[in-house]
Amino acid sequence: MADKIILCLCLDITEHDLDRAIEEGFTDAETLKRYTAGFMGPCQGKSCMDTILERLAHKTGVDPESLRRPTLRPPAHPVRLGLLAGLGGFDAS
Image (cartoon, rainbow, N blue to C red):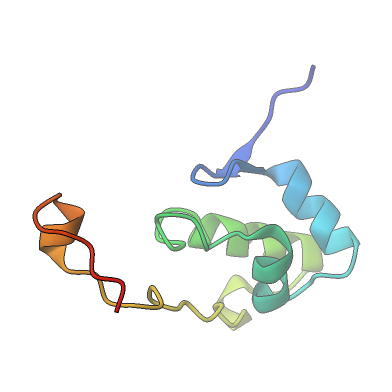
């Protein structure tokens, strides 16, 4: 079995997965994000964005600096730190 090169540790997206998506026509960061879910793991792209964009630039033959970064969005609802720490109850309102 060939070695896997993992580009996104949060979601286990491999170089092969990314190359296949690019070959299928997902050649900009926004559509690539939607197709592969890259940039949408717990790190929100902080650990994988540069690596994925460099691979996209390499495969499409463009300058990495010319690529638009995908839109990153915060969680849908603010979450209190105390709730994340296990202090206090959950209020769904």
